[in-house]
Length: 145
Image (tube, rainbow, N blue to C red; front, side):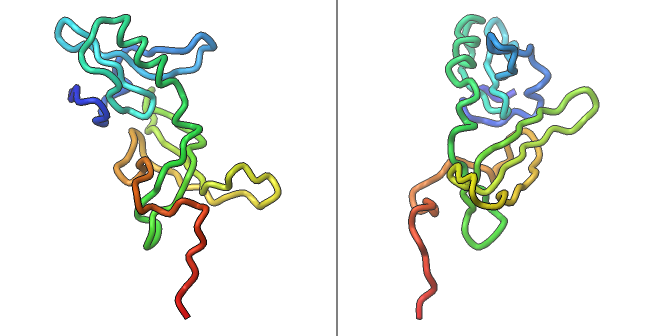
């Protein structure tokens, strides 16, 4: 298993589950020699090899905040789409995992439901944090006349 922070681990769900106080799964802790590596619920390495307590703390710090963040989805058009993650279901018990995203509607409850996309789990490369130059959702790009 890769221990590079941010690397995606295909066998993420094979670790020891770690849950918040409310019981919500936030990731897994994997053995790495004499140490432990935290892997978040998206399947990303969240800590270097550390002791058990530090691995738990890494997962507690990350929590589920990725649900609040904007993400970019590549491959659905000429430009990346700004999306929000609405569901993460890791693989397990004989089922494939999935990540469901929707086009970012900025919390507007007046508009029709946004288009959703179902992706594989763990985090696929085409779902990523925004980078400089990505559409920001606040700029209107009109075709040239």
